[in-house]
Length: 117
Image (cartoon, rainbow, N blue to C red; front, top):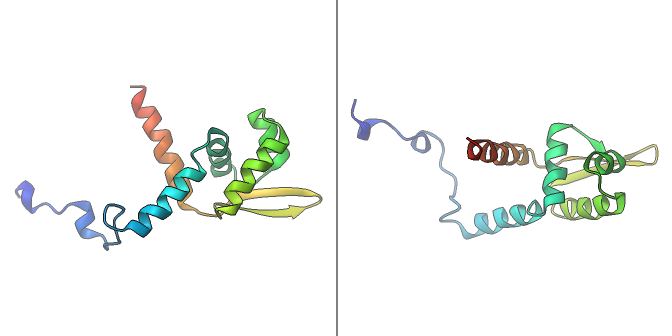
């Protein structure tokens, strides 16, 4: 079998609009990247990807950042519908609302790991 006859992975999967050709999809992806583009928000998303659900005080303690700062950053993520909140016993618990964020975080962590080689 020659190289030209080997199907590329994207040729065997259903085609969806590409970021390169679909301006709406690119704009939506840009908004997600902007939302996680702040170091604290990125760390929050990574923590929520690791743990299914965390309260603000647990995030603040883990990151050694004041609770009001964590709450402010969570509000931005919530407004972009990337995380959701539920309230129990006086505490706000946050979780990832967009499951594909987990892939984004794994990809970013993989990029970091490949750079250190």
